[in-house]
Image (cartoon, rainbow, N blue to C red; front, side):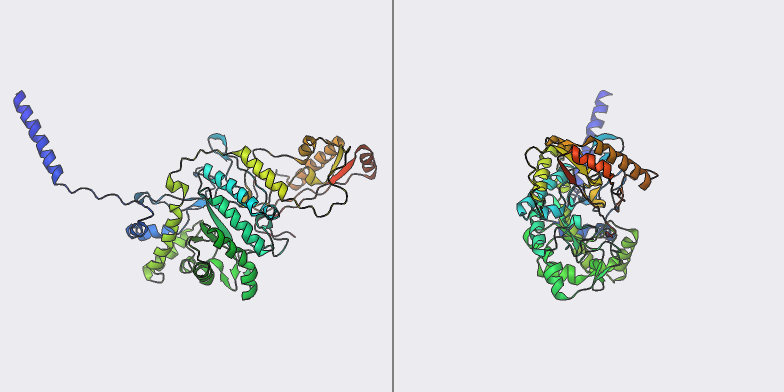
Length: 486
């Protein structure tokens, strides 16, 4: 019996080996590489191609990989295509500092506003800020910072001027190029925005910027042209507004003729978030990716290819640009990000560039403070409630630490009038109750109202003059997205 069992076992093994030898060897699985982009596109279904030119929605929820960020590109695991992750800027990595069921706080550095960086007139300063920002984005596992903003400050009341550099296109272009090169020196991508002639926030989705060729070329496009030629950002973001009657994301002259053919731009072009009206027109114009992506856009592009109004060759062209964008990402490279960053080191960059960007308009024997000046009376609500940055998607989050003006003066060896501090604290408390009877909202897209100024009585002022050596008055205004200042 034992011999019989043995012979059956050997025979069964022989049959298994014979059958296995006759099966064809499996085809190697196709995976995206820099060398096979066209082959990968041929292997994609139409549905996958359309998804590739549509974003995956904003990553605002707690269950997102990076909550509070701008979104990501579409992933196709079967072809080895990961998502590239996008976060807002330009003066900080905008993401949620707290995550559900996670005790860790994900702090990011609030760098000086773009206006302050430009006020240094120093491209090396812009490079250093970009370098630190590029490192933070990389350290936290994201791939692209949606920055810089390089629109001209056509009007001082524009709500997003804090995100822009200057009213001078040469300053804009040179500072932006250095900032981009700083970020991309870390292998992190950039997205220069908002292309183009986007200089007003009020009614921004319906504005039509009408202008002739000379101001368009010599002013409003010149900063973009300099920055793109000197830095080759990974991506360009088209704007909400129209230019001479056409939405920018649907304007072939802007994106294909000027940007690519004339300036030699090689990267991807994406829409601003929910910009434009016609996704098919955007595809035809060379706006390669619609962000953050909508079902109606997917359906429109899919149906246009099926009925022949959008050539699949055009879709393939746009898909190729998106894939080339993804190939550059930290995520594609499998970078093992630490999920923490050098906050102390970046704070030193912040402090250095912030100081260099301060502009002293006039100095009538005020600075430096005279020997013997020790007692200081601080006036102005902004002395006690600073404006850290403008509002909008680029400014969400909480800081690892902040230094108030009172603390800064004390650390510098001055004594701040304590009675005045108490008066301002009570005033600000009362103003908060008046302005926000239901409590201050944790985040606002547009600027929140600020406390009215507080004026001491004449008697109080007389006492403050006697008790202090010098007075410092701080004035502050804030601004943000979707509306301009009045």
